[in-house]
Image 1: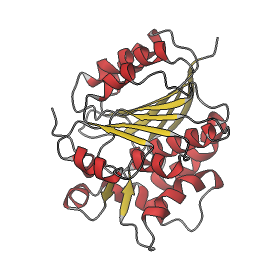
Image 2 (image 1 turned 120 degrees about the horizontal axis):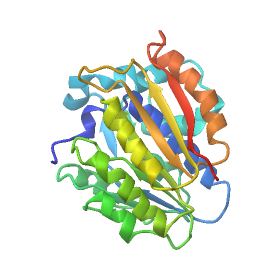
Image 3 (image 1 turned 30 degrees about the horizontal axis):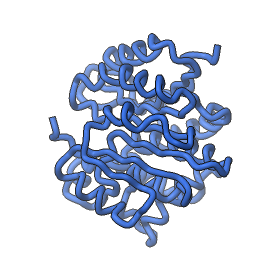
Image 4 (image 1 turned 180 degrees about the horizontal axis):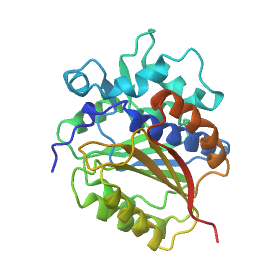
Length: 281
């Protein structure tokens, strides 16, 4: 159950997509002075050394963030994302990749709050250490799905919830729709981000269908595939389901995804998707 370590996969193409969407949504919330909550259900260790044994074993970051890091110029919409990368990589060489908690740590303001959850016995102490001096953050060792009941709604009535399990546990696919609905019933105005891998398109689509069946409105799907769907082992694509997306998000992704595709999938073996799954009414 607890064998998954994100350190093998940090900085891959799926992380790039996930963290770009996360960054855009956080920046949108910051347009108003009122504080908000960032809740991360599956936080991981926080930061990842890309020259570690785990990262070097898979080399996934080489076809992900390393390709973006090499670009002489980036599009303006990605400046907040790259500002975090540069904060943790002060030298020209790319050494560390920040996970979603550290991206939020850098982008959130003094008045905002973070609730971070990690259950893995090796990753939790690393995460706790990263935030030991951050008064804004609460770091807990619990089942992340349960936080959608216990921590919502936030006092500020503003927030972003990232639901990001490993999907190594097969029933994670079945848990997503129920967990989302539990959170939404308590906090219907929050932004919910659900990351998903595409290993089996049938399994992923079944999860998405379950999300649609919840009856929740205003749901957008954003996906980057670097290879066609197949029956071989490995992730061919990843995506984000966004509930209550910021009004600019779809247009922003229409600008960003073609640029990403040219870098991460230059032969256009896969495809890019921005799809309104459920309209507002």
